[in-house]
Length: 421
Ligand code: HAM
Image 1: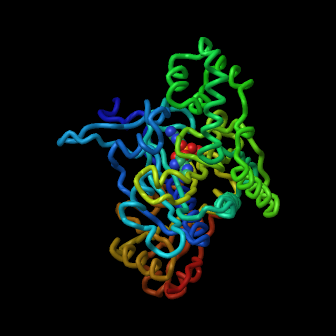
Image 2: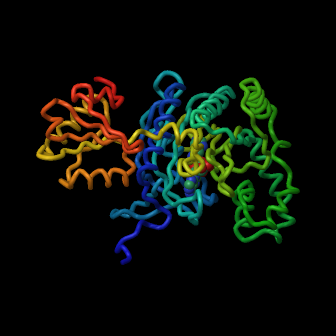
């Protein structure tokens, strides 16, 4: 019979044992980011729609066709956050976080929403681990961010990742490039689709997003950003590159790297992992020196990244998965005349001793309980029978080896590898 309800298209239930890996990845990220001075921020999932229109940009795919936007009962336009940077900047301005001494380093972990066509590595509810630094103008901050990502990916046992980066320069570099792109494309506008023609007027840089093969061909001959960089912008990028060399982070300059959000300036980057096919970016980020001012704050330079957790989990290396595989809990079974409540009490004693344990509660026979335990891939069963109870002992059965032995109840937790206290 078909179930009466199904999850919404593009969303997923994350189930055990996979959820343990999610938690392990998140725990590793929290530890690494803390070591770089980041603290957690949790912003609401709902924001005013205008926040994303003004930051991500009106002509982007995200704002133009991917947002979950609706009116609440009072007619306000609200949006399920499609990304994390704009909400952090909103909070930074609204809560005056810039008044604290030093730069502000924040990270976040949570769900985001984009109405995209679901496929492998692309969901309508997906999850990000993101980090933002506000108040650091220098290229060393760009480097620290990349260094932190490098460390995190190494701790997750990734070997085959590619850092691709480019620069969009400052405002005047971008304006000069946008103008050159418009000059190149206008006489060729008959080869552009309807959407790109609209972008040509409003925001020519967004045309670089296109996936149409014919438009891509046209763009292959278009002027490149690097020609329009101001001296200061070029110097910033060169110091980032020199730092990557100095710190031994391999990378590739990709002058045609496009990010799907309008707020970037200077350094932009993506990190791709092998094995993901078309949707291979597991990290995207960059600098956004104008955004805080654009959203009504002081002109504060800033930068950040977001890791796509769903994608990262799909290619999480076996070496990390292996490390996380915890020993299953011991099953405690009361046999003979011993009351099931005694199994509950013994399981609790084991947990006091640092051993994960579950008590057999079903009241089935010892034989049936052992059979069920093998099917659940449990490895250790503790049997509390009449005889043993009298002697202050229990039987420990190793299901993999098919062996069993008597152990004193007092020494049981230590035998099972628990840590006292
Ligand atoms: P983004 O490149 O749009 O950047 O997203 C970052 C990552 O989120 C992507 O590389 C991808 O791994 C993941 N992602 C995005 N959309 C989906 C989806 N539909 N399904 C699965 N994964 C997805 C940002 O969001 C910026 N806020 C990053 C940033 C922070 N820039 C500066 N600070």
